[in-house]
Length: 329
Image (cartoon, rainbow, N blue to C red):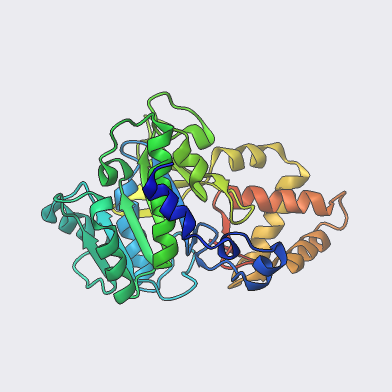
């Protein structure tokens, strides 16, 4: 052990490092959701995107909508949002064109841009944290991770782990939610292994969303799928269409298959959609009971209704505006 490491270890306070479990649970603050079940303060959401999937456009659209206290993909922010967009791939001219694409010439209060190419994130982490705290920013979008860190070897798990640890310490210190944009692997691996390079990035993120272009014949259709969610057991699969800077829900192949079967699941789906029509939101338990009553002459079960609701959610037909509630998109 070097003299420096020895001195460092001697200054550590064991009572601060090692705490009784009951004390931790008593003092722990609840989770602080910022947007649906996908963004939480002091959490890292990794967005792994195919080329052309619209990751940067989605970042601008989401940031501006939430800063205006407007819903994105039908989901309202949990609190007023201020966003720092770290767009490390775009010049000022391109930033302007992206903003006009998603929101026209209207003002975008609460949205900040960092697109300097002079520094890597480790060089500006403290000044960025100071700025974020000073301006009450609670959402940071980093596009993208490789450029932010000047990654030497994409496949080096040790390097990736150090980057993710730095970001973990940073979001904790700044009390922000972070979207960390990353590129897909050329190997087209599924789920949590879809991102390029070392697996440590996916392993150390809290939430992992894949944004894919599954059909070359329909380049405007993208698939949003949550392959990992440490914060909440909520992993929807949505199908979205890129439409002049907007992202709108479209019916998925899953729903088409269910629709053609004529099964009880389809009947339950039809009931759920009819019940939710014209409703701002509906409690989950009440929705299940109403669907059961609507199909009381069939062999409908609670499990079938739950399955129907889950498939409607996966396909983007219904959404959760808040915990325990549903509404039609």
